[in-house]
Length: 246
Length: 246
DNA sequence: ATGAAGCCTTGACCGAGATCAAGTGGAACC
DNA sequence: GGTTCCACTTGATCTCGGTCAAGGCTTCAT
Image (cartoon, rainbow over all chains, first blue to last red; front, top):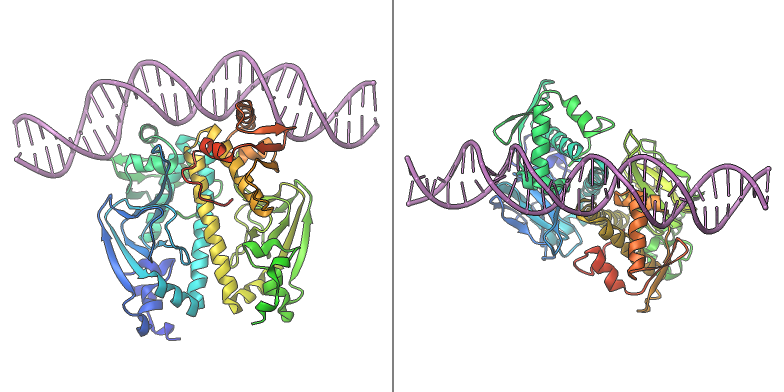
C-alpha cells in the first residue's frame, strides 16, 4: 500500500480525513478510480435531496452545514441530524434517501458516484471498516439525541445544542485554549426548534433566559460566547463530559 | 464458498439469519472458529451490560426482548432502542457499551467473543457488509424515532409504538392473513413510557382512550387486537405505510 | 384467608411549553 | 430616506401532558 506516502494532515481541501473516507488517501491514489469524485455546491436553503428520491451518490461535507429532516404531512418537521464539515452522507447499498437533506448554510460537498464507490468499498476493506465506524458513531449520536428529545426540558435542550455546536466547532478549529468559547450559531431559531422538538418562540425565550443569567453571552443574534463551558454543560444535564458527536 | 450447501431457511434456533450475521451460515461452517460462539440467558429485569462497562462480546437476540436505555443522574430514563429476536447487539471496534442493555422479558442471546468476531469480520467481507447494512437500518429506525419523540402527540406516540410492534411481530411470525392483528404487548406501561418519552399515567390514559374508541381491543392488560391496521397507522400520523423497523 | 407487592387505572390539579398576536431591528432594495 | 422583508423577541392565554394521590386487580407468600 502506498498510503504511507501521503501526508494526511495536509489534505487541506478534504476534511473528510477526520472521520470518513479521505478522498486523497483512498481515492486519488487509485488512478483507475479518477473521475468518480466531484464537487457540488448549494446555496443556503437549497435541497440536496428529497426523501424518497433516487440517491446516486455518497459524499461528505467540505464546508457549510446540511441538515437531515423528516416531515409529516401536516407540516410538522423534525431535524434528525446535522452534518458539519467532514460528516458523511449516503447509504451504500440503498437506492433512495430516507429523509430530506437540506443546505442550512451555503454548502460544498465532495461526492462520489455511488456504484464505483461501492465497488471501491468492496475492494478496499478498510474503507468499509471506516464507514462502519462512522455509522456506529452516528447511531450513538442519534440515540444520545433521543434522550434529549424525550426527556430534557426546553432549557436543557437549548444548552445541549449549544454545547454540541461548541464542542464540534472547537474540534474543527482546535485552538483549545481553556478560556471562553466563541462561535457563530449556524442555525436560525426555527432550525434550532426543529432540531430540538420545540417551537421557535420557546427557543427564543430560553436563549434570552440563558443570556440574562449569564450562562451565555450574545452579540447580535448569532454570535455566542460561552464564558464557562462547565456551567453550560450542567445546564444541559449532561452527566459526563464525555464527547458525543452531532 | 460452501455457502450454498446450507439451507438458511432451516436455521431454526438462529433467527439472526434474517437481519444479521447468521451463526450457521457464517460461523459454524468455519471450523477454525468453533468455540467463539456461546449462548447466554437472562431473566426479565436482569441487566445484560451497564453503560460504560467493558463489552467483550457481540451477539444477537434469539428469543425475548432487550432494551437499550440511557439514564440521567436524576433518574430520568429514555429507552433508545428495542431489540427483538434477530436484532444484533454490539459495537465491533468499540471497547465499552454506550448505554445500558436490559432484559425486558426473559432473554436468550447468541453471543460471539468480540476479538475473534472482529477477526472473522476482517476475513469475511460479506459479514462486514451485512453489519453495515444492519447498522444503517438501525440508524434509520433511530431517526424515525426522533420524529416520534420530538413532534408527535401522546396519542400518536402510542399508536406509533403499537404499529411498530404489530409490524415486527407479524414479520417474525408471518401468517400475513389480512384480518385483525393479534399480539401480546411485551412491555410494561412504564417501559412504553420510557420508550415514548411519556409518563406511565399518560400511556395508560391514551391506551384506554384508543380502546374506548375501538382503535384497539384489549383483553387483560397486555393482549392486544388491532381490528384495522390502517386506522391505527392513521392515528400514528405515519405518512406512508412504508416499513420502518424498530 | 390475609397480606403484600407489582402493575395498572382513574381523578384532580398544575405548569411547561404551544399558540396566537404584536412589535423590534437590521439588511436589502428602490 | 422610505419600504419591505426576514429573523427574532416578547406578551397573553390556552392546553396537553406531568404530578400527586387513591384505588383496583393479580399473583405470590404466609
